Image (cartoon, one colour):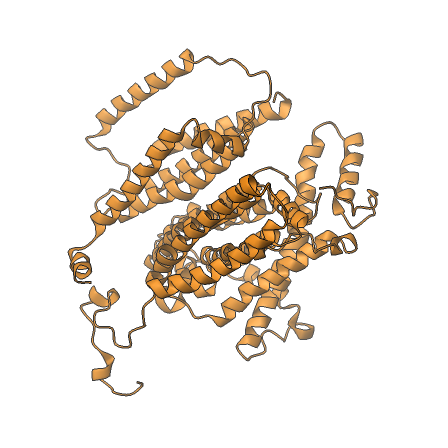
Length: 423
Length: 171
């Protein structure tokens, strides 16, 4: 698949920003000693992908947009005092966090407590190395970028644990243990479902996946709808977004692993949570929504603008669920992962493997069959989601006879005997 | 493969990994030791990258940093009587002897191995790794998966409380 839409490779052709960075690096290679380009290239990539895109998105889409949209969802205005329509609110927030006193408990493990927010930032930056903004706009075009994404996003779990443990506060420890238990549980269906995508496209590279979608003129969203659903739920669980943010459930355990953090140390956690959500959106936009391609429009509009708009559109889904859904309980979340998502992910993987073998051996990889598979898989996704929910689901009991959670606390007193109201 | 950058990266990684590994032994606090262990794992992943085995490096990070280190942390936190301080125990002497035996085996293998350099670029693509796993090495692969499943079922059976079992018998 050639990149035919690139009319020129002049440095001023903004349809592909890698022309510009390539021109800078070429010029640098001529004047600087050998090897300097290898240091300069990641710095340019960092400025482009992280400083210019991610940080600004975090501030204005993540902090401001999220608060505005959630405000609208909850029938209030959201921030509207600082600047016109409140657009300067994130800057005011950052200033406030920077000037706030950073408290540290006297019994805390200071080294780990101070280093945890810093270490938390590192994977959030590293993950952008493999996200393809355009056909040539990838900082590190490695053949296993999907595995790289999974590896890098598994590190924050450990950092969360460091943060929660170091504070010497039992609520922090509860919070971080919830994070870890949940992250381990949700990693399993996530990886199993992404395996289905890998089997179908026969590649581990995010760029190749985009090209696959371009070749067959279909988004993987349509071929593998179930994987998108599972990815979305697992990503929001690992990111502690609201339907699943039991780790910071303020009605149960104060603020979870963030209890003792204040000032900018808290701000780093908060900001980078948004950064990980943006990275997950970028991953989803690449894998499920065709990345920088838009059925031919990428020949007219710069591909990176299409990609960024897709990332923001997917991030809106995160905001939407955050503003709409109530928080789940921890046992519900764990049961949902192991009893619901893992079985349907395994069935989906089995079906996709069968399709792949049929496609390669019986149909000689004919192009139209991918549309047949899409229809089959959409039907399968609906059947699995509904059918398995019917199978494992149960009618919610109004007056549970023996709830398990309060058994430790000495039993359960039915509310109805105290007051007959509220039925 | 040869090059100034690779050599510099090798020595930096080697120093990093060795310091972290020493930290595992020296740290008195068990949780600090686990965090040093994580740094060691990351250093090893860096070596895999230097050997152009990127897939192994990523697998190392996912499995060791993302899963095994977390499991060790859980084990330390959830075991009621495990000492948090890495103090002297009566296992100190047997453990030292075991470590010396292990080191002897490693040194023997290192000196015995045939460290011939491969001329052409070795192909370590993930697809070929996967093919080898389900063709040449299918029996160890299957045995490992059966073992893991058995361990999973065993763990669930171990932690079931008698009440839950009675409940399931009724249902």
